[in-house]
Image 1 (cartoon, rainbow, N blue to C red):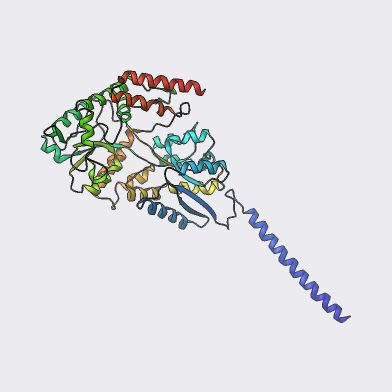
Image 2: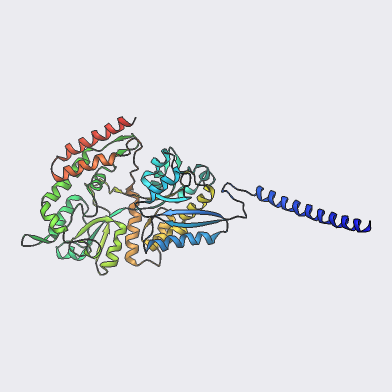
Length: 447
């Protein structure tokens, strides 16, 4: 009997202990459940994010990996893994992953097609997050913020952009009897200066003053002349054959034909990229190019005495309108940790990360504070700062041209007509009239 009592007492103690343990476990589980968040885990758990981009070069990959690492070290709730995918594959794979319900958490994408992805339900809206950060949009250049909205709702955060500037070789200007401190102000001056710079050896040009389609295309000239792209966003209609656009296309055609296609092609055939670039090699007196292309001058023509200024105006007072593109950070549709993803893209486009990206890559960033700080960075040379600040200043005249929802393939209708005009098989007026009609027909067919 005593033995039974002892056994019973021991069993009772064990049962009470087990009950206490289970109660404690139950309490812990309840607390964990109560702490669960929208990001898909408890506050005590680390949310894993997969971040995709196409930055895989020896220069850019370490820079973006450093930014990711800094973010991971800045807090203990979110861990980001960086995944590089080639430029030609990344967005195809993203769409496939979205369709399969296995989307990455964050991706870098094209800024001029945000509205298309929003319309097709391929990207998460940031509206609810931005409501809690009402001042966030003021961090970015206004033109870039406009491009990430559809019907007033933001679907991405701007990451970077670009603009184009006139570069000229001051030593060549001197040799040609031009004032090295005074770039051409208008297209007519540009043509006049170029003729003074041209040098021939027999029938062959050994130096040319300027080539309109060296680094940019005719669409940039048309945009500079009209002050807009092919689409009027306020009126929501195509404006391809704007009279100034016709004049601009005719100007480019006439400029090139004073030399002839054979002469220009023969001159260009001498050069490739980098060291062989005609401007970098001192064989071209002036060039309009992306501001970030300055790095070719910095790296391969260290002793060049050059100037930098906005692209000349079509006519005096017409304005220095320039085109820009860029990329955004966005959350693909169906991403499982939207709240955590938003925290990461906010960091990615914040002042600290953006300044680091700008300085290390010599890239125009979307964050205004970062752009201003980068232009004063001690890590930049005086020439770096001069060009970078000129680019930042030029952003006030730089516009984006988001692809219109009504005519997503309109560029494919316009470009063949531009080629016909520049090859001489159609007059510029006829080519742009035909392009205008083709885009209008596309709009009608899509309704």
